[in-house]
Image 1: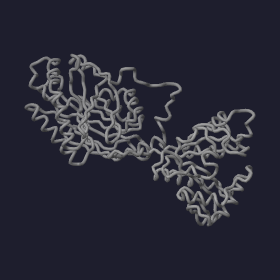
Image 2: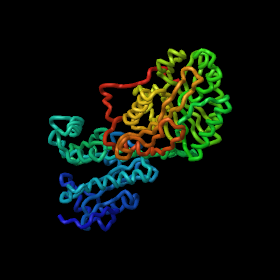
Image 3: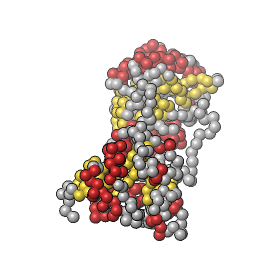
Image 4: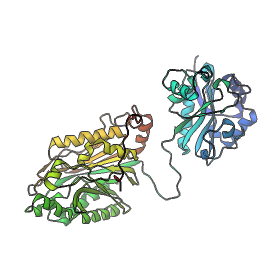
Length: 510
């Protein structure tokens, strides 16, 4: 066939004659399986954007019809007659939440041109544009009658998915990202080829936003500000916080949504207690933590930025922990703990591992924080991913390049396996007058998953090694949603939960 023009356009009553002829051919096994002119007029009047045809050289080649419904008003085992309101389409409502497919077909002489994909793509774009929760429809299984005496509809669907049985309709729908939800019994009257069974197929709109009456926004492009902190001696708390405010001011000036500080960034304050033993000095440093958090919270409000405070020592119930705080720009704070302390932290300081692990809600989506060594334990970030984490922040402190490489490489792996962004920030320089804090090596970075929408090497931005500076990078949250649904590989979806599972023990979240 010589194709001069392919056009996707809205259905009009002028197309009815061609439409009727095409439907009779497409559904030849079902008696009177075509819409009458007044029914098509009703559809067009109620929802013109939902009715489209595709034409080749001016000739009608295919069609897609749909309505919008309030999905929870229907039984999950509904029939075609019920969903269409006894074929009246009175079930259509502009304030519904689901785009329901009424009909889609391509004439036989035009099959093989991937025209059906264009119709499905239009539906997906319409669903996104109208902020509908999903697309749903009952898909026929016209080859099922050949196997009805041998296997159940459920087994038939499984064998089609495993490519053991060829079902051109179901195969096509699955290849277009629709996932089978359940088997519908008695769905379409007179569909003997499918034994009146249908497969409820669904496509989730990853951009759907539940309507809210609250005056709030959720940012999709999030700007990260990483502080690569220079370890130096300070005269006291005022001078240290003056330097911290300088960096908050700097990243806020670039309209960053987050400022990330490194692990133990306030260690220079131990210089005045260097005459003490290491365990005594770190516990003395812990007496400053409450004030540091209070002042960071004030900075978060005054500079309109969410601050991840890195980490600090804190005494709780007479035990020493390595903790940090998320100071939101609305004035609220959240605490996080280092779960795995290093052998050095345990041996030299007597530090204890924490027990709280959870993702935090922010005005830029859900985030997680893992302190340094915790990034080397993949179970923790997976638990956060299960809670919907989009960005993982890793404040770290490493003395050698060996230690840094462990944090860097493990953090990049966390981005790939959890389909999230990972931002790491560390300290540079040295503290000759502080025991157990001799030298630091760092290169702060922002990692992404590795797929077409992201940098090929999975690195969004990187700081200059061992230099005091800030690193600023934008990350697009919507790209993560697309990756989850349409990525070359789908790490979160493809986990074999039939073989293994991961969950927090009771009491691990307080």
